Image 1 (cartoon, helix red, strand yellow):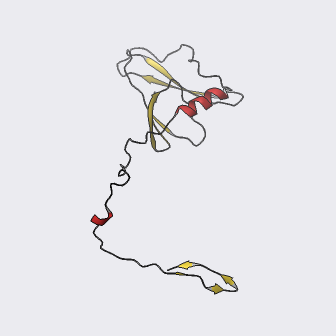
Image 2: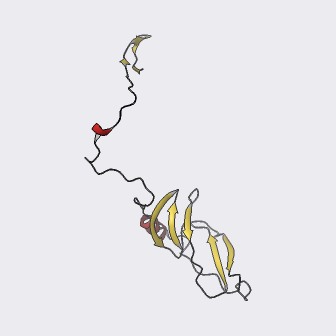
Image 3: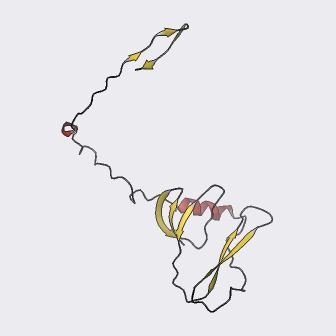
Length: 138
């Protein structure tokens, strides 16, 4: 799986064989369908729980002549392996250049070239109200 996005932000694209997705998290991945026509498992299992709860789906090519797999489920990381989970979480990085606004390099913006079309004046006050000083901007 190629991880491309997490929580609405692009990530540096990395391949993962397994992906920890915790409560409330969302990820977008790309799966390349470049294998020989067959049926493949997609396995989702709980982590850090006893007993482990497993859900199974099949990815089957349209021109596959084989029935859904009956082979044993692939092994994932150990259900209680905190180090694996932390290591994976630390490996996911935002891609700060993909689809992002391009800031002007420092010092390159010329404020003298801005066409002033409106002026707003702000007035601050600090009156005493009810025996206490209050601050306001109008």
